[in-house]
Image (tube, rainbow, N blue to C red):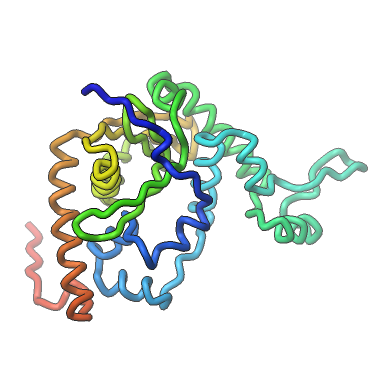
Length: 268
């Protein structure tokens, strides 16, 4: 594939600004919520369910910034550990009142020293994989694209866009041995198919998609997967069917759970 993406098509936009437009644009996470349960999607859209940042989510978000945006952005966006006690030359700790108040005043999430150390080990793991380094050596992080797709206003925020290798999504996981199962469970293929399809509305062609995953525990292995074209094509058809069904649910203002009918449980 002769690919040369013009990176200037990607908008630079803070995460908070991007997420604030959720009521105007359909995102991959919203579509995954709808596929899982239309009622869940609707209640989140109405603000009846609030997504709270779990510790694992905060760690993953910080690792994204550290690996994809670099140390300067990482240290700017997060409060790392705690201040140093001049008497002991050791950190006071991120749970001290003074440090917490300072971080809140700066609008920065607090990372403990153990989290900071863990993120550095994960970054080292990524840097140890030559294929991951090649994909992340050149490109653009967190680029936003908005386009009409399936008669719906959609938005994506791509972890990393390489001009010649396409979309690169960064994941953290507990164990690489189970990453492929996790990818199916969490619908990573659906998410990537949505990204690829929305991007194609702007550049006029489909692009390759890679996943870079690193473990959150020893030995901090990093692996790279290319999502097959067949998998993406199937997921795209499923996504487009879901978007059409979403339009029907909006029109009827009916939001099923997906469990209205009796199912058959057959345990062999």
